[in-house]
Image (tube, rainbow, N blue to C red; front, top):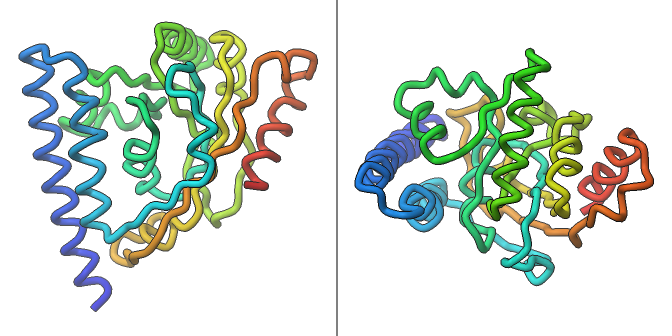
Length: 233
């Protein structure tokens, strides 16, 4: 029975995602400012979360200054993390995406047209170029989200962090906003699309970490410091 319900959810999730991509593409083609971002935040993510029978509770929302530029770092347990962050944060957001998503028909184009950044972790030169592009976006006032683990957690525990996000924070010179999501695996377990659940996802937001806090730390200590903050949220 659970597999049947999961299949129904996935069908409507996929259908709504397709329709949202088409609408976003139309708004982009007729050059509506922030049209794709509006669709992602105000249409796609709320309905997608409703389809997935997901409620959201936010703790620490008052710690966000909507006028501040942030590099947002969050744990990554489930695909559902993406619509949760789109909906929760009080501004339009842009993800750093792995290059493999570029190959997915329509979605790959949409991600690029939206203004998100692909990163090729297997090529150091290209990865540095991606970080430079992301830094430029942040300096122009856009809020970039990175999952510093680099991929979804296999067991629900916080994995080791990659260095790229910290190079990005240093280049952009902006505060890091640490976030931890609880409960996402109960709604959409990693690599178990026919075992979908329902319930509440809690988004816990920490105090922003400003560049001066990290400037006297070596890179490994910066990584450990931020990782400990997120792990303890």
